Length: 267
Image (cartoon, rainbow, N blue to C red; front, top):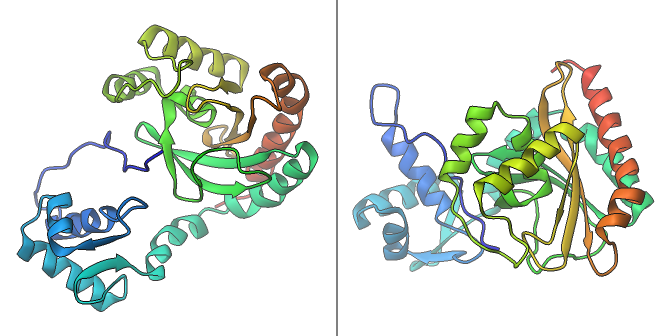
């Protein structure tokens, strides 16, 4: 599954409050991915829509700052780029609070556990505790998946105002990931409404054949959903019925424990 930046964000127009060169710098950073870990100047320019001269200025600036390195032909990101993501993670105490609870949950259910937040019509993984490799891609912190076809995403979408959620649905690209993928608006809206009503969501092989997951919300002291927690497993080992009957209670206990801790801690 290819990770792509969210394209639902409002496209800002240049003005007094918009720094175009900064925005272009971020586009250059985002042009690097698992599919393109190293790029030539021409490739960066083509991927970002910049001129070669513009792409070169940005790459050399990033290289001077230590975020990019080059062998003279190919450019790639350096580990320092992780500082940008960790600045977000370290600013949110929820992840320090959630990790030990998630580790306890994995020990209890013997399935992988993840936490994610919503960005446009995608989810972004912010914490992962592994037990077995369950997907054909190696997901980690920062990985993105389509929100409408993941249990984490549907829980997060269910917490949005209805008009906001529908606006995201109207813009999301449709793709049948598996024969089980729900694509029509009516079905997707019904499944999100179900997640809202029951307080959890199970997705059975809609994103990837053989992948099943169940998610619950993480709420702050005001009762607002700020993230979601899930358990993922293999359908041939853990059926939807087993997931719901045996693993859901443990997941809900973990999500409520994290939420209670958030409720007693001020940011």
